[in-house]
Image 1 (cartoon, rainbow, N blue to C red):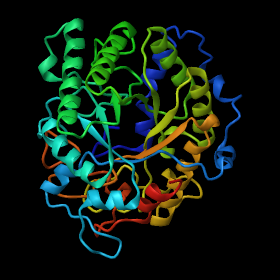
Image 2: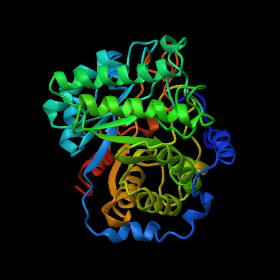
Image 3: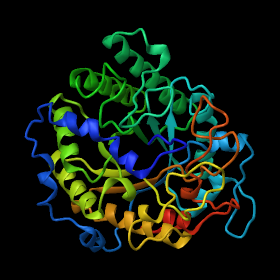
Length: 397
């Protein structure tokens, strides 16, 4: 998910429109469009029927932590004691930390140099590592898959080689220092492909060549790693059938289907439950909710208009309070646990440690850019952990 200083929920939902229009222009083998969601035995109610089933993945994306700490961020227990945030998430019961990787970011963060020491901290704390390759110098999402500047002059075979080398470089370095990744995403929110324009939705042959290169590098460097292909719009079954039907038809071999599911952008819970039930059965792969979040307040700590700032954006029954945030996390855990056949592996909270600090904003090219996310973090404006962190780690553990 790309975070911008001014982004309304309606605008975020509209980001997928060109991609969904594209779906009609590319033949999807066996595609049933959106109709697959309507006949699936899955709903919010059925998600809760899975009893006490545990989730093996109860993760949090902490990609912004090194930059935040370098700009003075501190993290505290609920009663105000300062603590190492990695220890806090481990103590809460979080199983995996997700770390995004950019190729050559302008601010020097979210790259190998910062991931390696963070991985050592995670290993010492007993938290597994989930790497999220964006194959860009900045945010990659359904509306932005900008080619890294260093790859600008490469042809398609050269780009595939660059994907392999970059993936192998990062994952190999992690393994050599004794902190191998357990999960790896080959691309981020790939609705419209990756490495545009060569790898966009109009060029599935190129797109899948890039995916295969990344997948091969992951397996060559880290044989036990589990690979994820990740889309946004987790309630849109037509999108998932179109995209994965095409990818599978090109012989792409992966392990896990990843979904972003934000209630304020991606539709009702019942749609997400139906989609997960359908795609796990259709492709014979388990799924993970790779991104979700919910606000603990609609207030903002800085002068940037936050993504979530209006009561109309909230989901009924989930107020923008610490308790409402924790309740949403229980519901998402139940959603994952309710996938038939135990095929829902778990979920990951997006950027739960991205609290406000001047200089640690969303734009790597602009040090003055603000944080439009701090009211969705798992720490409050006094840097104290919120109840949602322990819910994330302990509920369905």
